[in-house]
Image 1 (cartoon, rainbow, N blue to C red):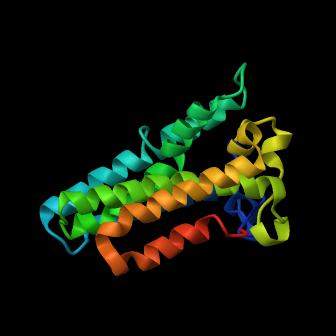
Image 2: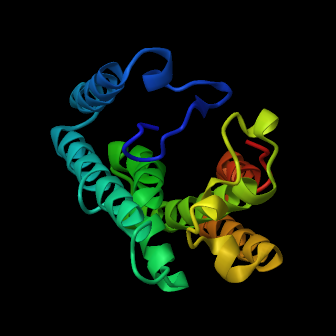
Image 3: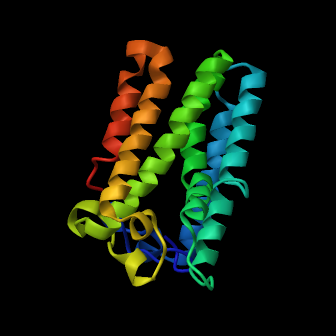
Length: 210
């Protein structure tokens, strides 16, 4: 949300932290929340091996190989000589959004020390869900209502930024998001009816208005 990145005034219908307070408070709040996340993981009620795996996994998903790396690529793309290709955008978003969603999808299985097949199923679910989420975000930026999304819309086009929508068009972008959700839901078949809530979440991701 900070001016040096997205420069957003609103998030979920409320003033962003740097707008309501100031940039220093926003930076420090982000730092504090990340430290808190790792602290909470250290107190997770599971085995030492599972706890270590959770901490290591979040470090990877949040760091240069995940969110931070994806965000850096996203910022660099704004001043690149040529727009990103579809494959490049897919890789960028897999790092930026997908890494944290993927970690979240598998965290429960890590805590429970679930069989490898179940972890792989959840990893596939998280990967597809993360990409579908981003495509839905790109669609909302084009045709969303700021009053519903709670944030500014039309920013990608104004910046001349390559997105799934700009490269595929609205209809093809919707079709790709829907196909990703189908794949995500199918990956959970190993869980039977226990996966219904996660499958419903995946379908919500591409039907949401904010």
